[in-house]
Every structure is written in structure tokens, then in C-alpha cells.
Length: 76
Image (cartoon, rainbow, N blue to C red; front, side, top):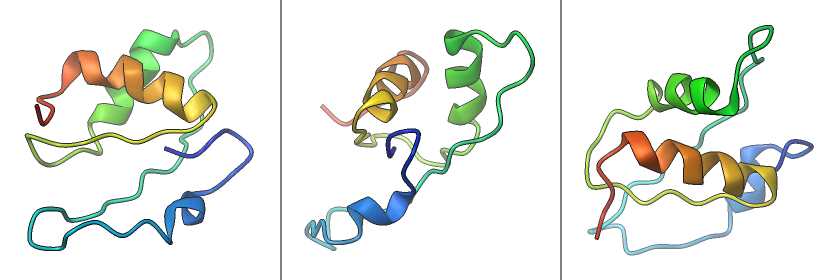
């Protein structure tokens, strides 16, 4: 997840083993009025379609993926 002033292309040069990982980029959604970070993180999780995932985020995107991790099955 990029920082708030960036888009997912900041991650375009990250190369992971293709036999182990498939990259999916997330983009910021407009928050609802008075939506908490916890509620926003839960809503963003709806864009995740897999289990056993790895989340990567920078700046405020890093804070968001930490919150999202509470609601997802992550790779150990």
C-alpha cells in the first residue's frame, strides 16, 4: 500500500519469485465520513481475494496494512 500522496506504481520495480508470489496492487479509497481507521482497514480488506498473503506498505500505507493484518490470514 503506497503512502497517501503516492500510487501503487512506487512498487513496480519490486521483483519476487513468480512461482511463490503474485502481486496485486491496492489503491486508496475515499474514506466515508467519520470512518475510523479500523473500519477503513476492514473495508480495504474486501479488495483482498486470497489467504496466506504478504502485505507491504510505506508511510501511512504501512500503518493501514498493519490494521488490515488484524482481519486477514497472512503468510507466516
